[in-house]
Image (tube, rainbow, N blue to C red; front, side):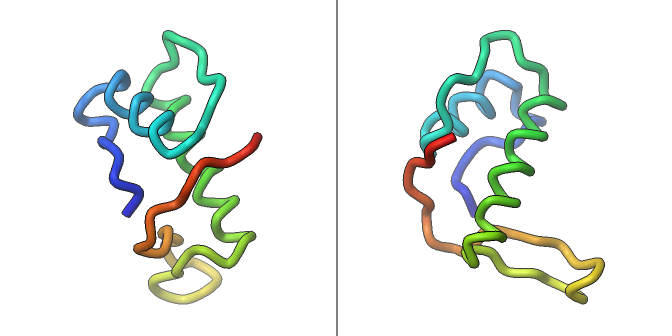
Length: 75
């Protein structure tokens, strides 16, 4: 949905994808777990902005970004 690489393809590709969608100031050397946390925080931000979809029940479903490509963000 975000059009970024998954961590299974390497942390460098995931970091480049996060930077492509506008997330700045990511330190070099971040591991896949830290980059996953950044991705989760970004999806949480989209949820709060009403730019996500929840699959399953609201209380325990999976939150995914809406299909539209997000633009850059300010942290």
